[in-house]
Length: 313
Image (cartoon, rainbow, N blue to C red):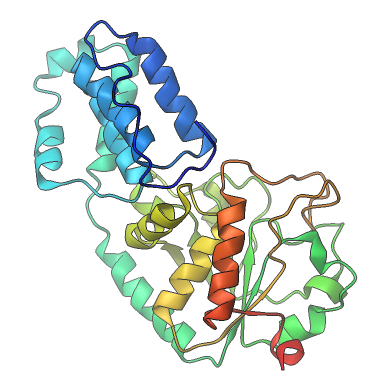
């Protein structure tokens, strides 16, 4: 499969359609497509075909998990099916390791809606709307030697991502103010304490059994709704990067508040890519070509403005 085909790419339906198909090879194909970031209908069909051939509980769970990866919550019928499993404690105790892992995923899929999160999002939306504009600062090495730090810190709201400071960064280039910090669920470095924290991914607070330890010091932790994730996946055919995901959500929450963008550069030329981590390279599972096109479209539509408020004027 060509990397990052369109979301509506149809699968080769004649493959693996008989009962005697190599189920193990099909499962490996499904996992491989997911890990590579092939978030489209063709990959979903492979997961579904594993379940149709085997009829196994764990294949059904992994099919539903990938549906959620695409941004789709459980349907009423799917919810009912999951609630019926496991039927007895004896069956559960006899399950092999693979099915026990599937049962942990089942509990995540059945997580109830977090009502406290809705109230927090309303407060966050009010916070965004009461400020004149926001400065979103990515981690591209194109911030080096540009002396944007002072202009960034003058913005009423500053948004940063993951590891944005290190011994390799200079305050004159990056600034130091952070009002909103966006964090990946597997972030390994010290946290940036800020007024607001966004856990990137498809509603990860509704998915993870426990919030990451990195976020223990954060006061207000938010999770991006599945609907925002789903729209971007359908556009990109791949999981969106944290930058594009958060930009889309901010534009939805506060459409009239201007968003100035710096440090977004998805081209990996072999030179330094990440300003705070000179050894870091672009993650290939994201569709960087389509994201660059989307950013240009947003710029034409005045959804974002490249630069700071001072340089854009």
